[in-house]
Image 1: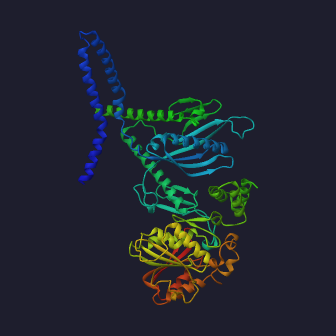
Image 2: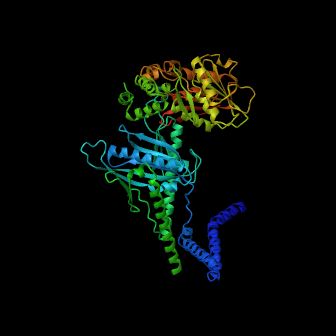
Length: 345
Length: 281
């Protein structure tokens, strides 16, 4: 018990380190400023000049700390910072054109992962005959990949003339993306704090007639149903049932983790009157418009001209930085509102 | 013909979804386009995918497959995995396991893999030289030692040639008794059923591994005779026999009639068929 408490205290101490650092820095700068002030009236004009420069510099630093450093300290550290991500992509409106666009998006995220140094595993993927991808599940392994990718959840819309369109008309198609948190837990089966093994129904998919020696068809598809939530996961990409099962459990765990996180967020919202908008996954979040050569993110109202720079360059990261800032600002507002409530009491 | 044309032929043969999956697996295994074309052609005439690719996953293992040795089935994979939890041997006190008609060696090899080191000394017998050879190769591939010399730190597996139907099997000096665990997926297809088997089974897999006599029961009777011999099973030994569709009750009775089995139970496979008869001595 002593040990567990020690760990808790250490964690608290570690958590306040950034506060202490900021305060020390503020005090140091402030002291320097006071010292410099006396030199502003120095008899030596050279000295006076130096002091003026330093005074200016120090007051800038202090203002900066007031405006940026201090507010950022109010943002609670991300609880999901260490998590990897599991991304599910599904073609939606637009048939084969939607699948072709999904292939473009998939490539975009794999490029991003490469740039970020995340390890990627294509957990499952169904290709279409036209060179598109109907749906895919991709694992992005690496610290912070969930926090970076989580704002990609939602409906991505493409407007362009499909290669299959003879009339040259612009079509609108969509791809739905869900990004799930991936925790580093024991890989296959076994109870965890997310679910009990007895709540999971494991099924094989197709009928096999007499089965056994009578049939030698490859049969490795697996479907899991988490009975309390009704979540089902099917996996059939591998020849090994063992492997399919392992991956299906990984996806189930990610979905349950996602559910848990959004429930916690809801609870917080209920108790704190939070301003943080919930991520509605049916909401259209971004439009990729080919004729106008632009990508617009509807949540932050930002448009990046040069669509290629998003799909094939590093402009996607600009969106991600803005989205994260946007999120942090809402958290900050929330904290301030809460503060007002407290002072009103 | 191009691979894509062949794929469309394969789709009309085995269904779109299955064809797409198999095409993907063949593509992953093929070193070049011509290789892939040859593979799909073989598949189109009905050759099992497992022989074309030369392997079959079995639990966490990936075993070699080669005609005519019986391909490990998912039903077997399921009950062997369950058996690995049903019996819990401990490290450094090896139990003696005998697998009758071992084929690729899948049953003893998976148990050797899943149980702690030094928990089992397994022996597999088979009547086919091709099976013995393949089982030995698979043991090496899985890193399972092929000698029962006094080494209690490792699980071991020996494959030897012998016939389940031999009435003097219990006298075979290579089979050490008493046995703590007896496993078998013996041939259980009846004469009548044999003619209705899909071509991918009857045309490629060893009839000696499939055909269990007129009613598919010959090997269960032989196994019962073997069990009945004094000193074959140790007290509390576990017998696990895979059975064909509709045979479980008969096999259960055959086991009980040996007078050597105190308790029996039947395990279903994941498709809801009675698949394995368990007997406790």
